[in-house]
View 1 (tube, rainbow, N blue to C red):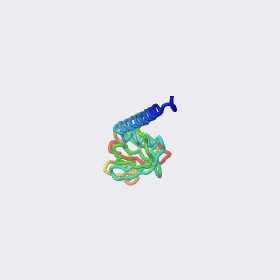
View 2: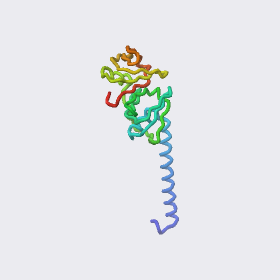
View 3: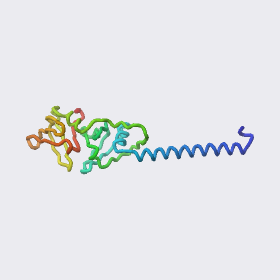
View 4: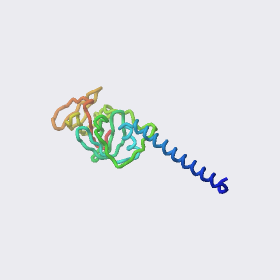
Length: 179
């Protein structure tokens, strides 16, 4: 009975304080464990979930500002100024944002879409796109068709066709109305 025994009140207050400290320690330890298991795809999916504005820098020095729309198996889709950009996850060098994402043990919203599927989805749409290959070389045109590992791009700057290894594509930019 509290109020009657000052020692009991002190012991109860100390027990509550100890329990609160233990709970904070557990939460901190769980957060540290989750952070050790974090992946870029998981973080990008978290920013997509909250609609955070991000700046994505690729390994070749290209910079894209926008919001993360989706994260696939090997690709992140951004809604950027001027349209959408699909960036191969392995080409992402850094991401900056003011948004915090709580890293926890819940499954991330990473999907199974691949860069190959993005390219295949653009084939035959007559949408003018820009592709950026590893190393930074760019080409603009329309995807005529997409095979297992190669895409045929009718280029606007070369007036011909460019057959591109899909594995070499680090970025694909297209209008928001496509794919």
